[in-house]
Image (tube, rainbow, N blue to C red; front, side, top):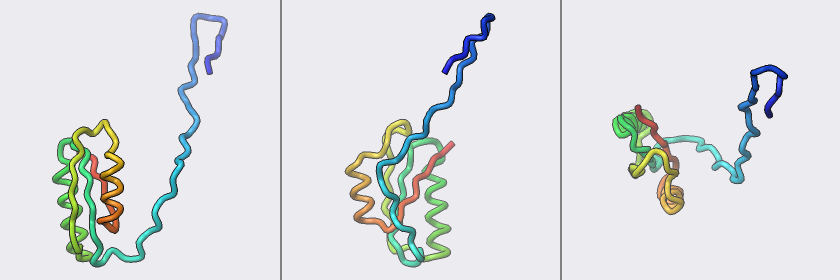
Length: 100
């Protein structure tokens, strides 16, 4: 929305309506012990290192059954829907890492 003040100033309202997700979130796990961990690296600097550290901490605290790692080709693009489906089938929980 723009407001004409009658002077040389034009004020612009930068707010927008929130996006409403058209999906339901997965139920929370009761326990992480012995679960299959998925890692999605957004391909930014240090994302890989951050995710490996997160995996080490989770394994130390809870014992991770397995780790499935994927690095996206670009941080500006969403993960491929096929990858999401595959991770959902093969992992009990997934951590997405943003570097920098």
